[in-house]
Length: 73
Image (tube, rainbow, N blue to C red; front, side):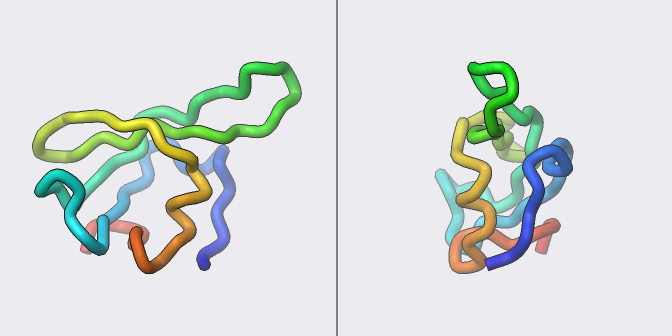
């Protein structure tokens, strides 16, 4: 697992180890603020570079190096 801080994820680039809907390269387009003030960030919006489709996921999932690699590989 790699170390990440949710506040530094915005516009970071990621490569899926196994393509997701035929997409490999993704960009974090939004760090979703917590619902309660002072709460912790839980979610991010990840956009596929070519298809421009967006999916919401838990930012902690990016720490799994069996699923995600930092940067565009």
